[in-house]
Image 1 (cartoon, rainbow, N blue to C red):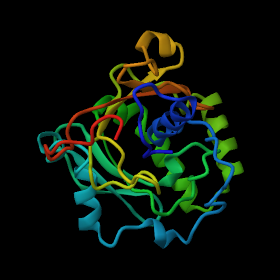
Image 2: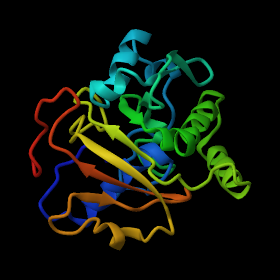
Image 3: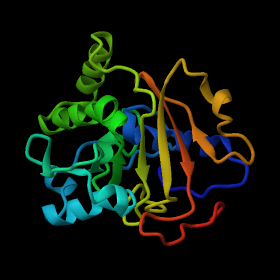
Image 4: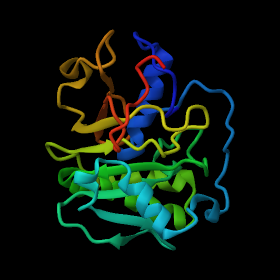
Length: 244
């Protein structure tokens, strides 16, 4: 799903997995080819929490270079949703996403191990992050997958979930995240959110041999998400080579 081995020419399975990663931020994505479903239902909510607020703040900030994250607002998971732990000054918001940021059909939707440090830029704070924050409130209120799916469809129809703003993107450059049971943190990368009618994969050259751009699929969310692997983790140390 999120942390997989990348080959020079992505296979269809890899492209599908890339789309799963894209959903972690926008509420988009599709089912993987896995037949097993290791997390069929939600775990006890405490299994999704970190040991302390300080640990969650530090992990959230690790999503982006310190020049960005040091001045960002930081949200942490509270009893009914995300709460502000640190006020920011630059318009960015850093959080640690949980597994329910994945697609509704994704087998890892209830994986209690997932910890995805992400820093959203101001455009995505306004137009992408609210979808995930609302879904979190539904999860903590005990809503089922079916209920959340229907609520999402209704919110889209009502214009409450809208296409992302121009320039919406985020940083996922933490080497301390846990994005998958296989490879944990995968590669440092940036993610870009665009409306469905913005030209599609062809406009981005996504998923082509030699292209660093991946993604572009979604399910019911009015956004497509593309991500680009970068060379270094947020602390400046080298990330794994492509193909590793």
